[in-house]
Image (cartoon, rainbow, N blue to C red; front, side, top):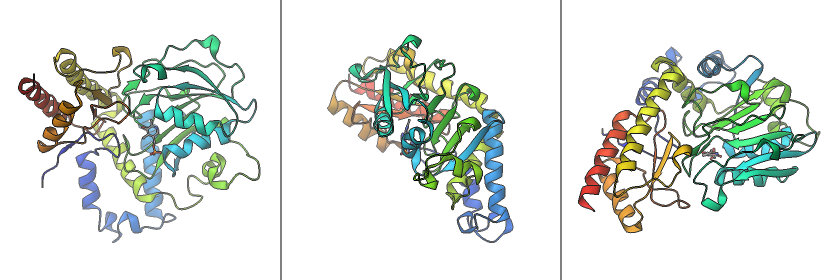
Length: 360
Ligand SMILES: *Cc1c(COP(=O)(O)O)cnc(C)c1O
């Protein structure tokens, strides 16, 4: 058996230790003679799984008591609609920062429910940076303020979280949750699809401050209301049990590694190895402005489409997989999420160095 280094943006690499535990427990989960997939979601074994997952997530993110943790379905994309549906209640206005494809989709959904004010955008420069924010342009009476903390496609990240005063701050953290320590209390709602830094696709984590959970108009389906999920501990209907189980193993893995602080130290080390090489390379360059660079998703280009294609092809033959960039940026993208070992990044840089020597 040969494991490759998988640089996919998502679904993405999972920790090998987690996959091994899942394999060991596949046929017989802790002596109950069934796999986790076959357990009743109302039974005591699964209850233990979901409760431990929540407890560990609360611990590694230091989530304050007045926040609910929800395990939902529908991906991050359903949150693009659930956020405005649940939170656009008073002024029916919201502020959005436009930093790429994911904010674009979120803005389009929000417009179904109310007025969207785009406070800043980096669209004219193909989203190669996080735009400067000017608080005087924020709407004082907005129902919330929305950001995408890490832009998976463009490889940008906020180095400073905007301060929005009394306006609740909502963040799509799908591609950088658990990659660095954050102060949850600065946010009113955080959501993340699992398939980047948490686990398999199928579960979406929502961390929501309790005062934002309220009644919606009667025609809103129960499943689209945060209140439904908060009141039923994410058990209104059958939750994505297996995805929650793997997410729980990942949270435990992070805990055992020394927590998010230690994971972040390793992430920074990995990112530095890659950016240092790119910045000194005569062949590869980063399209992202240095002050906005993500430590999770690292796009790079040669400037020649045919060389990019050759690189991706040869890298793949060396077991360095899924390096093709998103079509809107081109070139390559290395996603180096929590589960990507330092050795994976070293192997990539070794190969880039060799490729540069042979192709310049
Ligand atoms: C992947 C991603 C999404 C979309 O996630 P789905 O689970 O496929 O809906 C949204 N936002 C960001 C930042 C992402 O990286």
